[in-house]
Length: 327
Image (cartoon, rainbow, N blue to C red; front, side, top):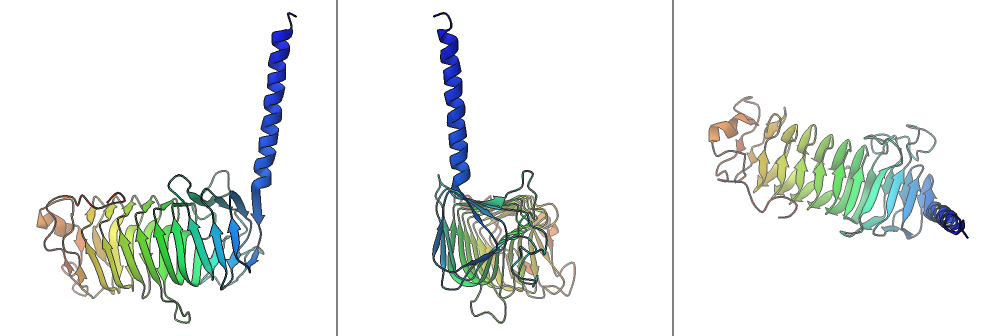
């Protein structure tokens, strides 16, 4: 009788160990491993998915990812046998999700979808990208994207990105048009946190980007880069604490209004060689109301006569309250 408490404790310990083993085994069974290949019929991913090579969604096919799903990319050999394509102009050297059909990754506030590295000590560039290639009607909502070369990369694609978090990527979001592709590149980026990447958002050749109500901060190189983009606008964003706030190259009709553009390391706006077009940047908050101090944070025609002029007239008198994710 004196040993009853000891036996009871031992029994409880054994039961706990058995339960742990059962739960662990179930968790392992729930992880779906997807190797190099093409998804040729409508497919749904849920719970846990491990990608061990390039995975392509074929044209006309929809991949649906359920809320709460964790998608991990194994760090494959660069340009090794797990790659589908040798062309590195439009594809990445590491494992990627290539979307020719449609991707619907719609998480919820309490059930975010995660795209990340499978490494124990992850680093930026462990995997390639969610790479949209000549595809339309794609949606990412409430997703957490980390440790990619480029979180979202679009080649001639229509993508809506909302309520997502991009961190520790080489570039958070990048989009460009490709002449031989039929889909025009359009992206709606709203209510996202794009924080702590190499670069924030890159709007490339002939793209149409709508960038609104985002927190774009602490990105090493830039917050927003317009590179030969067209008819794009950025409104109600916090563009702060980046290497440079906004960089523009050979870009027409990119309008910036009602943003908080302040506290970036070097320039709030920097025009690169080839940016001969003027820039409409009226009614933003620049961290100060002193126009001379604002001008000191802008590199344009006044510093290089070959460049366009940044029009920052009518600056806001105080920070734009509606700007940012919660706006």
